[in-house]
Image (cartoon, rainbow, N blue to C red; front, side):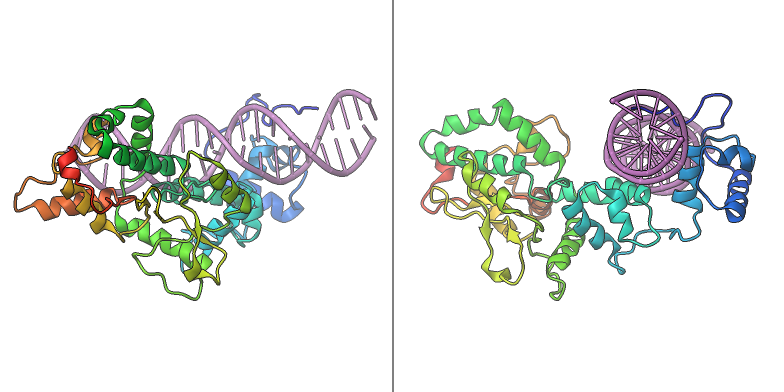
Length: 327
DNA sequence: AAAGGGGTCAACCGCCCGACA
DNA sequence: GTGTCGGGCGGTTGACCCCTT
């Protein structure tokens, strides 16, 4: 099969369209309609290839194009997220459900806005499920912590494991965001799932479209803790909370997407005054390296900052474990 | 005020598919 | 069956803009 290159290089113009070119294209299409894109530019007096004309028309000049930012009030963002969870990168199919929006526009918006926010929330923008690397990091750290009760040196040493550093780097780089930003998009997702319930800022967003295969994958993978549980509190939804942190070797551990349990993180940190924050072990400058037990008057501020910038990871120390003594 | 860096988005690229001769 | 064409698709590029230093 095959097709000649979309645009011949013989003197055809590329790059941004001028107002004059736009007007020529509009005038021609208004008179003759569109189609026959290969011969259209010649007939319209344009030094462009047909493909360029078609894209310019469909993505910009079409009279029914709806310009401007995507509207949260009109649920455009929610619809995009929801449709993407079902359709994947089928931008044209998504665009078909959003009158006046083009596939190119939706694709750009996804890549520049939504995708980044999902990543920062710890959600895989491809699968719409929590990122496995974060789950593995959580599992790794929790098991290391458990082992540290038996072998403190082993815990510190394991933190220099290349696998750990890779996971932790990915985790920290994805996790530098403001809570407000997290909560805004989390609220969008929450409302997709529970449109009749107002979103509470400290709730964990429900992840949509978690398939049985996903669950099977989790349950079948012995390397992952069973963090996925059907949430009885949202029994009227089809979602799952990837929250928690239930009874693995007697621990609560896992990750979170909101601010709840932040106190537990801080409590944990305070219990290990000599524990070097992960960020200081890594090359990334994104995480504070300020130790938490400096006793200064700014301790609370720094602790808040530390917690808020690392609020995806929750560690609960099992009662009875003297962490201070182990370090 | 100027430089640098990051974000945004229009436009392009390469590939694919279906229709048709 | 084969080649050509029209059109659609997702990914990528690069110019522009804005913000920070």
